[in-house]
Length: 413
Image (cartoon, rainbow, N blue to C red; front, side, top):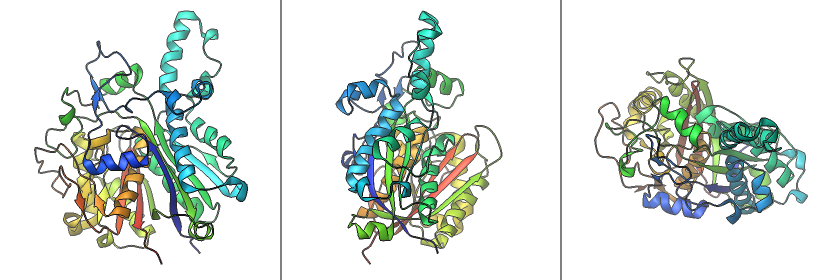
């Protein structure tokens, strides 16, 4: 028997908010989190804009000594996890710790530490680099650190599927609870790679938008889109088996009901132009939820603002939903947050859950020039009040990874 899975805690730090409340307020207001890069000197870079976490100093959130032993992505994950844990009200001393698990992903891991320690090694010699270099850079360390802090002793792992990582983490955590392996899961994703190597690497791939106008940089589904805007931050969710949550009197934000994961098996960076892998991923999630395509009201799209992604994702939605595609609302909140890479799917899972809870569909902001290849209802420029019941969230990653999670509005039974 499949068990029901609900969301009882959420935490985030990202380009439009230092916590859940601030983030959701700014989503509703359509705030753009993109600005000139402040964390590195961009004098010799073509790229000038990114979606950084604003006014961030680790010491404002973390003990100074512990922060020094964490890469930026682990700092973000820890901050968001502490908020989610507090929000959930879970007390590990009242739980079986082996029934509580952790899946926290990162697409790249400690790239900032890699960059800085390589420079230090060149200057001083490689036996003079930080003794914390290895644990700071490996992509599973956010999951490991948070499990140590929370006392969760069940499964502890890190799904690394590029830009789909955070969504896969949520989906795999959902399955762990639904299929009876755990009762509580901490899950999500984090990324922090706005650094010389990160900016340089994505620029030479021609993946990034090089505009100097922050309001025309991340413009999903717009005909003038030319690349994504790199973001940073984390999103963490606490999932629980329904009866477990009820027994302890937990507040419930929403319910996760389905999950799909596929691969394009097409190209290392480009999505399948016909969107067949993504289409089957969405179908899989909807079927897994026991729903029909016409039950879905809203899609939080991957919507990166690259020419290939947005056109391919539009085709995929049409292939998955048929005529119902034109009745769906399909927005990209990356127009506000930029692209958090491995953290994006988790932050978008949080936004999608809040959209269902409050009956508000976020906008695709800064939209101006229609693209006939992206002709769905993208909720342009202004969010909408709507009594939505079912939503899905898409993430598509380099390597052809596709992940879709399906959510339902929670209504007291």
